[in-house]
Amino acid sequence: MIALHAHKTLRSPSGNINLQLELEIGRGEFISLYGPSGSGKTSTLRMLAGLLKPDRGTITVEGYKWFDSDTGHMTPPQDRKIGYVFQDAALFPHLTVKKNLEFALPRHSDPSIIKELTALTHLDPLMDRLPDTLSGGQKQRVALARAVVQQPDILLLDEPLSALDAETRSTLQDHLLALHKKYDLTTILVTHDIGEIHKLSDRVVKLEDGKVVAHGSPISIFSHHQVSGKFQFTGEILRIDKQELIYVVSILINRDIVRVIASEDEVVNLKKGARVVVATKAFNPIIIPL
Amino acid sequence: MNSLKGHITGMQSEGSLTMVHVDLEGNLPLEVMVIDTPETVNYLRNGREIEVLFKETELILSREAIPNISVHNRIPCRVYRLEEGKILTRIYLNSEAGPMTALLPTTALSTMQLTEGTALTALVKFNEIMLASR
Image (cartoon, rainbow over all chains, first blue to last red; front, side, top):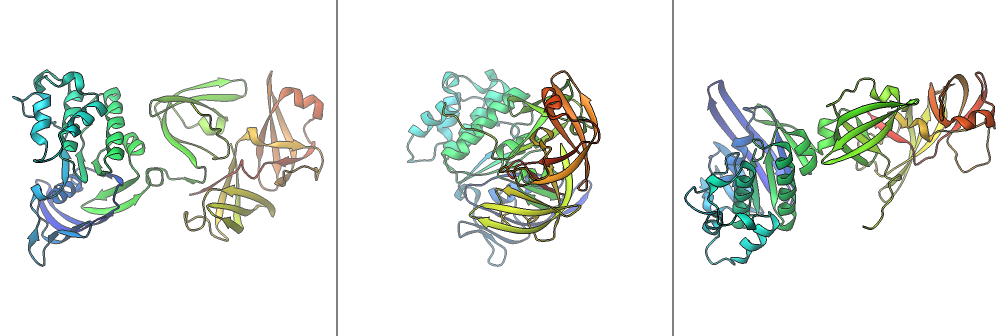
């Protein structure tokens, strides 16, 4: 459990921001931080990483105080088991992929984790390459593997996929989920991409002006409608075809296209590209072993 | 999609399942099963106004007022329009709970001898209904 009760006044060109964070994150949760620029998302990550000192409050992780303004204690960044990935991969340019990963390996730890990670993130063919010869997506894959090589308990991700094209982003999201599960990480992702939030996170925390204004499941935060159907996904309308008296609506859900039968009142306000919730009862789907 | 308004009159929970009793407008009772309990969602409250949603393909129509079948959610209604396609026909229905539509195979139209004004019972199974709360 991470308990963040931290206050900090940040000075920015557009005036002061009063960060007043009251946030609890369960072990193993995948959390997305969502909110407008300047709402305090990156500062939240930096406080957790020990790169930004709160003015007052406490940060407690699994019962250990990482920060306490009353006693003046602050655990230094290197003693917090944290992996951090930024939008810019920030790899050492003169080291190969392999050396970049080995450099991050904590002393006295088993180097076999590198082999395991490179297999999981499909980096094996790139091990002898220098960062300059890699694509943006490949660099971020290395940055992600490097963060996990450090065997962190908490993975902090600051818009690591925002500069990538949709397909690369989707692949990296799959890698992220696989790593989160395999290494029992508590992951906190800053992102503006609502599709990404739905795909990855257990819970969204919405920040505005330095405060948590809402938190909950992605569907409860982004849908104005609460529907009891348990089989719920969000997707994007690809096409709407009228056939006989009904409409066949093709919807992209993650990387799969599903087709849903709809009546006119369901499609009347929808256009190609609209984001929608697709919901049905849990009683309808059947399960077939592969 | 059919959307009718009602309010919750009672609930029976068993594990994570709840049978929700809803009264539609016109005092028509309905049973709806959801995989939620009053502990997991805030809209499961007695007296709470709720929307009842079901697809037009899930509606069963009968000419008998109380058909002797296992579907107990019954809404008396009357046909006010038919929209006939080659293989599908949409039946527009009026009821005390509000307007509904049902999608049937066009062949059912002649077997059931449906015309404007025909009095019917609309039936929908407890597991085909979703609840929505704004």
